[in-house]
Image (cartoon, rainbow, N blue to C red; front, side, top):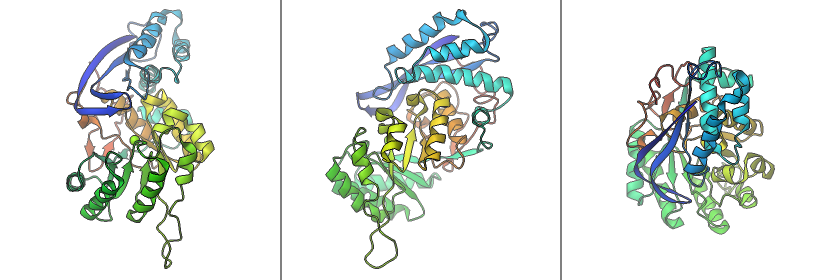
Length: 373
Ligand SMILES: [Mg+2]
């Protein structure tokens, strides 16, 4: 097993709970049967790209992976796979586990002659994966005119799902921004809004009531991550039977993102706090765990949406396979490659007309990553 550190610049700084960052730094994890004897059935590639606030730190991630490398001679074959994954706690070092789990899943899929998505659905005994995955465009903060212009631009590129970042300005301005987007794009475009936990309960309730007439596809993380009771209470606000005189708009569905990392999927389902959950394979501890979480959410009647943590191309491609393994998945947050000003390899699944094609394999993307690192 080989670890190769990388560092990629972001086109614009990324605001996180732990401050602003301008680079994405991580490690590639390569398993190589030629150098590891019979340890794995085929070469495999993984990526561990920690994100402050969502995963362990860069140094903790590297230490966890180097610990696995140091112990790699203890066992061989399937036992090595199980031992290595057992050594890493997904709650403590999710990014490290993601890198390792992805490398081993890629190796297994390559050995079986399947794409990663085909391997995931085979493991879960599910129907064949999708060939394309719909994606949303993300519209950042800006005044109402700039927000509407960015939305029109995205629609011109073929997106019919837009996610607008809110919560950085007053609620009055955010409502006007979303109305401007609706006026500019018409009713044929689905709108999501993401507040990243910015509002208190009073503001969030007012936001839901004022945004309901716009027919949002969902409002993401209107309250802080840990306030599951408050989030559960927001569901159904503004509800009524549409079409009767005096009735109010249908309720605004609530999606949770930061809450998944802060409280876990089980707590969200137990609290009945979400209509949709945003699943980030890097924060969940691996693509395998993300597929399991997506299936669990779906069975509980909650829509899973798969997004990246602004990762390099290897982990982004893995997230595309995770999304493809979810039948008729809702549009996902996978169009994030343009946020990096450099990458580890050409993107094997570029965005076109609001969707990405799922690489046919074998593994992550056939030979697209040969020579990486
Ligand atoms: Mg979000």
